[in-house]
Image 1 (cartoon, rainbow, N blue to C red):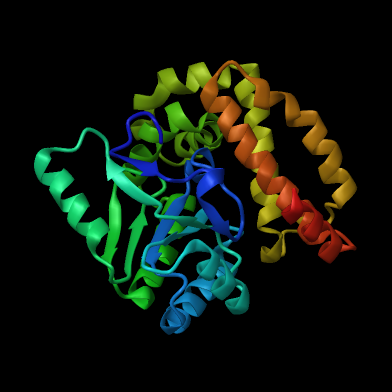
Image 2: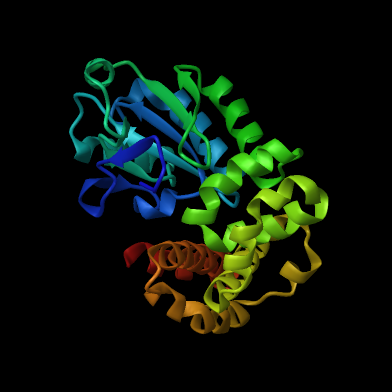
Length: 289
């Protein structure tokens, strides 16, 4: 999925999508990800799926993705039918899963056993896709892990946490890295000195500086439920103009800049639909696209 990651995503493409919000492998970059692997066509899974939908509704405006992986005897069509009845809106793909990059023979065997296991399983990955924070069968326990992981990725409290996140973000999400580096340098100037070269490179790049403004705006608008006064003043028209302003970043020759811009713009498009005076119609049109 990303440079330096210990894991990669499999079967996360348009041809594997069953329902819910459409995403891509690149969209998972920089987000806490919960992978829920179960038979989505099995009505007996109703209670757990409803718990997961509540989790998604709670955290969908945060740097988080709940990725459903349909795994079982039910055909995809039946899974799609059950999901509609339960009101599932988080992305669900057929047999999506995580795999280590360059796995050893022992790890390949473990992966094969896991994929053959029909029992539901939940996995939570940190925002750098380098650490599994949870792997088990308890949705409630996984929910607690997700909340802590989102807070940790959004508001690191010590220098080591900043360093861990920045080691990945500098190369993979430069816009976010520039914003975090600015904060890191203000809070922990001595420890931040180790990133002076990265700061000089990113802060001196006009394209990355523009990207950082886009990322900041996207994050602000997504968090408008937190009563941010500036965000409350944002209208769909303002967002449309902002998306036009930053759209060229998607064509950047730097793949990291292009991908992060695509992600931020996708979030802004979603936010525009959420605050639209005709939200229902806007949301329907986007779903049809």
